[in-house]
Image (cartoon, rainbow, N blue to C red; front, side, top):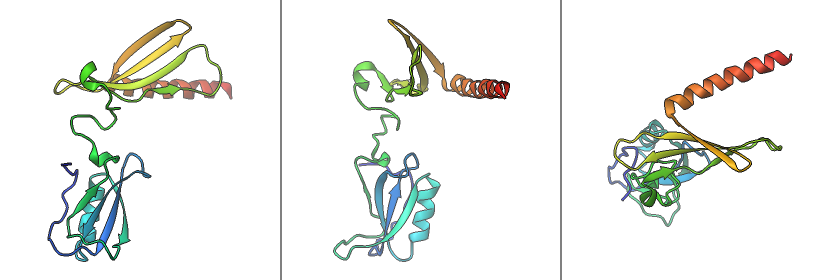
Length: 172
């Protein structure tokens, strides 16, 4: 059973409104559908949006019979995430590696560069482990890996923004 990231009204009356629940990470990702009676649409929408999701109210289909408070979670949506994995985890081989890993993101500017840079998130599977940012730079046959805390990565982002702004002002 999926634990919902929001508390929904559960009065048990016949549902009259269907609320589509979309991921806050990807607005196009339909994560689930909540059903409420005609008294509780706003209460349900408020609870769902407070949890960081977006909603769309639709009419009930005539042949669908639900009770107020019923939620159907789509297995591919972010509400269906196994709480043993972070939302960003690729969920493949975590137990074997004892590490969660996000999909690798290429730092690609669509032209040939001297180095290939990849970035990903990683986190040990042990309790209370913090996520880390992993940068991998490959130059020919040589490859270097730098592991940063989230705090270091955040500061690096700010420093890079400042350096890039300075370089762009220098060109003008």
